[in-house]
Length: 182
Image 1 (cartoon, rainbow, N blue to C red):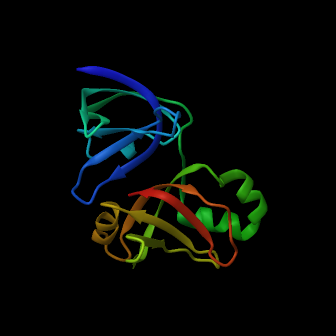
Image 2 (cartoon, helix red, strand yellow):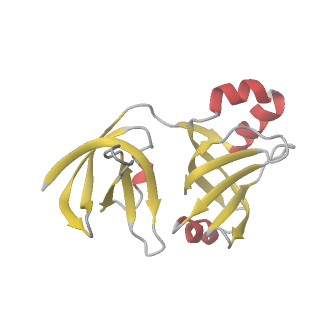
């Protein structure tokens, strides 16, 4: 067993159900992430992209790519995510979009709310999970890979919690979260 520490770039769930953390790797000659398959089925509950994580697992080189398998999260350090409800987030943007943008844009939020619907974007192999709000500002979450199936499992009106990064606000589109896990 080896220990590896690095900054989390992304968290993913493949359509086969493999859960991965992608750590920043080399930058020269091109950016290269290190894929770390975790034994934890929901690492997004413990780790947020941008944090430095220490993992314990097995190292393999497959097809010329470094992979870390059977990883266990030992420690996570760094900025924590901001927890907020979908209603609070929508109200903040409805009240003062500029101030809300300064507070939330580019940050990782854990948003809890009720699922309204999921629309598949088949040409892009992605889907949009829409959360219910009471005001004029919509909240949509872009999901891909195995997260599409996760989002579709939740019935409309049921509670859901998502982790995503807030995109720059567009009054027509509402609040959009990217790189979402749920």
